[in-house]
Image (cartoon, rainbow, N blue to C red; front, side):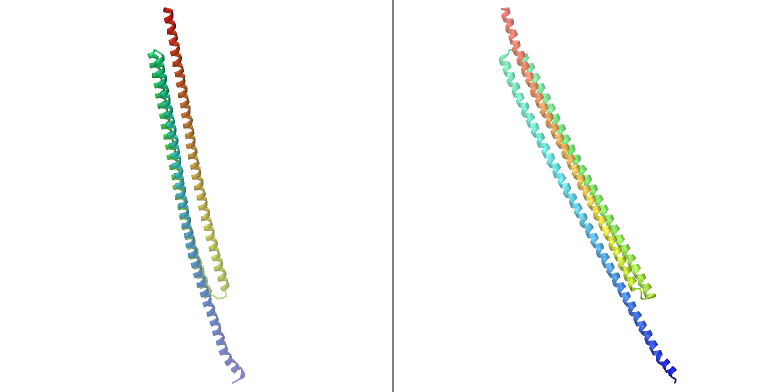
Amino acid sequence: MSHEEFSHHQALPNKDKNVQANLVVVTVKVVVVVVVVVVVVVVVVVVVVVEVVVVVVVVVVVVVVVVVVVVVVVVVVVVVVVVVVVVVVVVVVVVVVVVVVVVVVVVVVVVVVVVVVVVVSSSIEEVVVVVIVEVVVLVVVVVVVVVVVVVVVVEVVVVVVVGVVVVVVVVVVVVVVVVVVVVVVVVVVVVVVVVVVVVVVVVVVVVVVVVVVVVVVVVEVVVVVVVVVVVVVAVVEVVVVVVVVVVVVVVVVVVVVVVVVVVVVVVVVVVVVVVVVVVVLVVVVVVVAAADFVVVVAVDFVVVNGSRIRNIRVVAVE
């Protein structure tokens, strides 16, 4: 056997060994790529699931906090309304008591004046006229006071009822809007996350198939693509969470502002009504006292002058 033939027979096993070594290397690379891709897919899915759970928990906590805040605000508004109603009722009762006391005092004064006139004067007709005038004045005063008190109580009750109804309606509407917004946002987030996960898995599977079928040299590219996709998913979810938090904060601020405005308006209206009622009652009491004083003075003047005129006529006749 020549030297060339011997060399050729020695080179054949070496080529087989090289091919086997290359096959082993390629197989190892393919297995490594597949394992890496599977691990990455599993990690991405786990991370997405955890983030979805966290988002749902955060949304539930926010909804609970909003509901608690709304309940507290409603309770505070109701307590304020009850306190205002009690104060108004107490004020009305005090004013009515004062008016009754004034009326009783006026009646006593009228009785004393009538008794004095009867003792001093001999004109029973004048006394009867005075009594009739006083009684009419007192009846008118009592009717006016009763009407004013009834009107005031009705106005206060109407204002309080309207205020409570407005507050309750506003609170209910705001709670419904917040719940709807939160539910919509949660649904959108979940849908986005599911879609992103599906897309990532599909992309990874396609990339793995392509890599395994074609070549194994693009391991680094696959890793980079997966990392980029994970980063994009995280950024999207962070943006969604920030939007949810901003929406909830804005809604809570709007609720608090609306409730504060309604409470302030109700309190101002009640205070104005109470002040107007007190002023009207004071004016009525002053007018009644002045009228009573004028009537008493007029009666005394008529009685005294009438007695003098009668005495002068008797002396002249004699």
